[in-house]
Every structure is written in C-alpha cells, then in structure tokens.
Image (cartoon, rainbow, N blue to C red; front, side, top):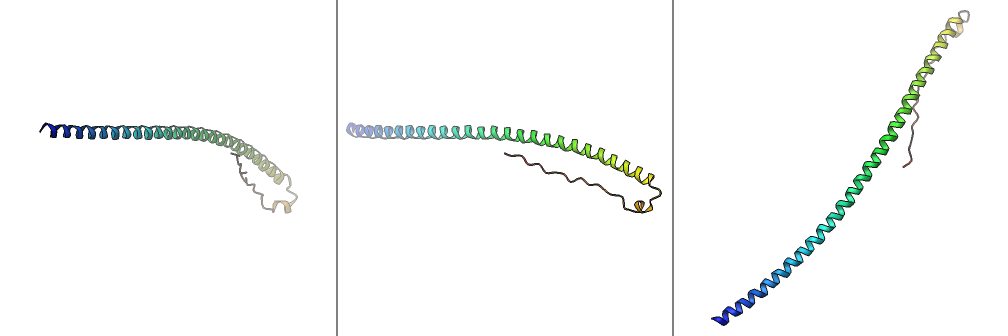
Length: 119
C-alpha cells in the first residue's frame, strides 16, 4: 500500500510539474500577446493623433479659403453695385439714344473659382 501511494505521489508530482510548465507557457504567451496589443494600441494612438492634426490643418485651410471667398464676395458685390450705378447713370444720361435704352440690361454672375490644396 505504501508502494502504491509513493507511485501515485510521483505520478501526481509529474502531473503537477507538467501543469506548472503549461501555466508558465500560457503566461509567457499571454505576456507576449499583451505586449503586441500594447504596441498596436500605441500605433493606433499615434495614427489618431496624426489624423487629428491633419484634420485641424485642413480645417484651418478651409477657414482661410472661406475668409478669402467672403472677402471676394464682398468685393464682387461692391463692384456689381458700382456697375449697376454707372449703368443707371448711363441710361439716365442717354435719353437721346433710344437704341441703347432698348438693349437688355446686362446681368453679372459670379463663377466661384475652385481652389485645390496640395497634400
């Protein structure tokens, strides 16, 4: 009976050592996987930071272009008003020229210029 218990104990020690090795291998694999995931997270955070910076730069460029467009719209409106005022003066001053009065009044349209930014 003692001999049987000693064999059983040796068998259990072997099983225990085997389980300890498996546990250690699992921990090493888990640590390697966790380190890989941490690297991936770091890369994704860098990508996110870079993307945010690029978006902020694009937003600034867009705001600059919008400011230029607004300034051009104001300038165009001022010139249009001047042209309409001169046209009115011209039409009032040319009462003796009926052929000019019969011409349709010109209309001015603004064609916005598209801007492209190099990236």
